[in-house]
Length: 180
Image 1 (spheres, rainbow, N blue to C red):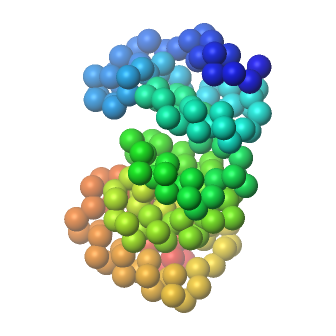
Image 2: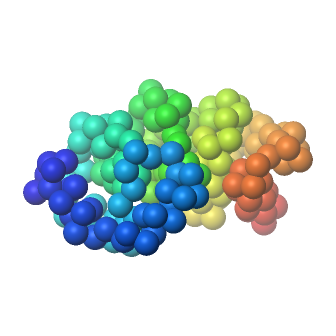
């Protein structure tokens, strides 16, 4: 079981029509939403191999669950700075930013480099993902060097007053982690 068709069959079997309708009504920017909840998506992901090409094909689709599964199925060693830049430019929702920050980005060798670039870029979704990821790293005991810490602290001061809700929350949890 390793094709997109097999994945779609699993998603269709797990579809939650009520949740799907609510997400569409809320304006989620996808052509198709199955309404599958995150724990079930994680379970589905375990049935498929991590495969960079498959993940890239899933990410390119306008289907919420396929994009979230792409994050889960992307091998961390192939999620390079270049791939992260491409995916960051096409990130669509705060949910994708959050899943990226927890399930993929912290496992990559370019993690801190990507986070700093996404923060510097200033785009709300990628900055949200970067802040959440950095918080995750700090909690795991990974330290920011002095330049990184100063850069992040400057960003926090500059962006917090004008950040949207998702970014503001991400900045606040990062700030709390830095202060601990």
